[in-house]
Image 1 (cartoon, rainbow, N blue to C red):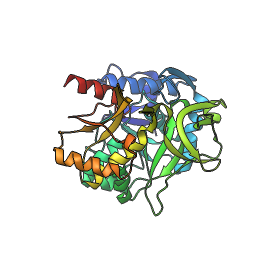
Image 2 (cartoon, rainbow, N blue to C red; image 1 turned 45 degrees about the vertical axis):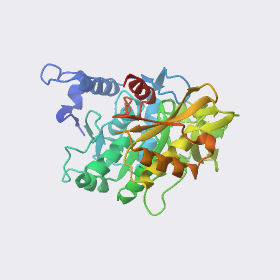
Image 3 (cartoon, helix red, strand yellow; image 1 turned 120 degrees about the vertical axis):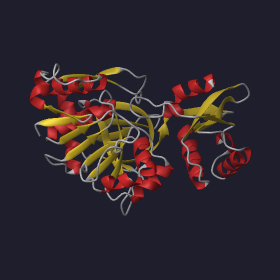
Image 4 (tube, one colour; image 1 turned 90 degrees about the horizontal axis):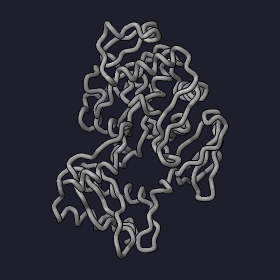
Length: 366
């Protein structure tokens, strides 16, 4: 391909490399960031600074090499059997590793890149007669497309592959994607591993419960039971994550939650992700269509108490009591949220994840 499309504007790679369009095509701030990255890549830049999300510790800037990024891109291209000219939709933040690597895959494999600023429904303005072969989304985007734009589902069905990452997949979404004809994969990875190193298929005849790492990725556990990763995408350095997993074999693992999301309440250790999954399943069972998460706040008697945060209007007391009763069938009493809070809209990070800290701050200001 000799060009990409960015927010409906066509930019030729030759002019991007020379940055010769700057006086002829008006661009906004996001477009400038996309084009600057593309220009640096096309001109052979060898190192790129990317901000991490905190998977291996406090968020920080790290430097990734072009060799690492190309290795990661080629691995995904080969696995998904993408070919030159395939149409790709990118509606992820290109300053984060997810969006950045979608662009790199397009440049490495000569794919037809269609890039739009991240929005809740990236297919809102797409037409079935112009389908995409490869689409990458965060869970919230895919959920929005399926629930709010059923007419756009045909575009999903016609794709070669759909990649979902950046956040856990809710039980509701896991059920919804089973109706999508195209293969839908949930990815596991982080900035330090230059995007995903493992995938699990969410639909098809046999949806997968566990992630399968690419063959040349070496996995192991540290003393906490957290995953460690080594391969060419890490410059053969061992990356120690904060993700608690069960290794089923050398390349297959089950994600249990984050070590830093384990809290102590009343002397009991509670894994927040376990409670979040149970809550999400109960909300689906009771036909309550809202997002939720679980957090902990200081409490004198217990040390920390669990709090469930739900998006939307405050539920009637009767319904909230039904949620509590249902949860009691699945969780230990110390795993049950002690309080339910509500906020109109969750805050999101630049990569599309629920920003729990910002949402809690918003709650305090209500």
